[in-house]
Image (cartoon, rainbow, N blue to C red; front, side, top):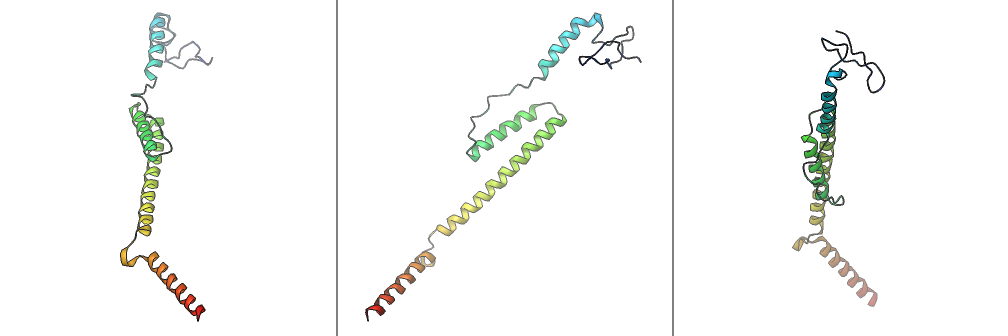
Length: 147
């Protein structure tokens, strides 16, 4: 089958096959001029990405704000038609989400450790024992110096 005799938008030959009764493709055939124009207009409009809702207010200084933005972004990407670009973007967002999750887990673990170190433990309170030992040493040194 022959290719269309017209030129494409870049000035090169149109690579589309011709109609069976014409030397032009469907887009370049004068009989389809109005339909082709409408198809181009609708095609551009149909490819427009329209957000499903207003994005959440973003507070990038808080983990919750970052999580909300990440969730919104991932939902918007997954609404798009399946494509290589969508798959790559989804993978990138999931990687960022995993890093956020791991950072959050590490922060929770460190906070728990700090609380455990700072919490008084009654008779086993190390800080109190150290203070008492230092006080006793100070008392004994003062009494020895007084003699």
